[in-house]
Length: 254
Image (tube, rainbow, N blue to C red; front, side, top):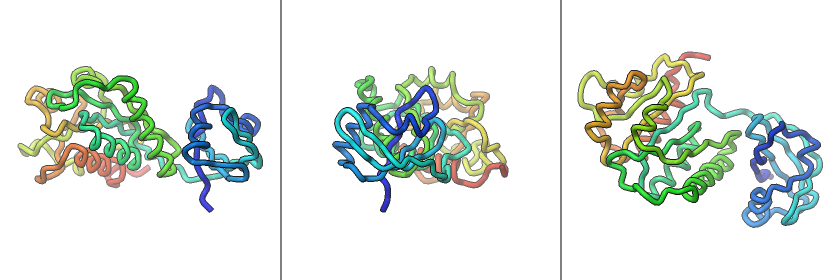
């Protein structure tokens, strides 16, 4: 019988058998009681994202203020987190498309997501801390679903120029195929060291503005690339690009 999973709250010290026997984190308890509807004798897989380890345990007591666990044991599980840490720099989309993008990017193994306010971004306002918290819950739920040992961080939206200043030294920007100098992404990543931090830049539904495209194609740390001749929606382009980067098999061997 499959165990329900939970992410242990961030802790200043590594989780141990002793510290794990009792939890009083309000958010975790709310999720277990009202969402997963767990009860005594149910079993759990408790994921420590800081130390990339998993504990199996049985619920002894659970109520609104705390949960007591027993029969705690460390288990060996495969770490499916990609060695390449990719931050997706994606222009904000309408809510439904954006939610799908967050969920699927997490499933593919994205390291972090930086929402962009680019010139052609349709959604400009209304992205306060409550939106960011909602986005973070979406990727957390997706990480639980795909049994990840890591929860990607979704940052607050940044203006294009501000984000450009923090792009990783190895980054790729998806642009329209317009000249021979722009290679397919599948070629641009060949031979890349997989143990790096990388960035993937994807524009809004209207693409990049001329000024943004100029900034991306002349940036010393960003390689302009394309995904072929077909016109893809922004969320589709993001997911295809992440798939090629994280699972394309084009990197140097470990």
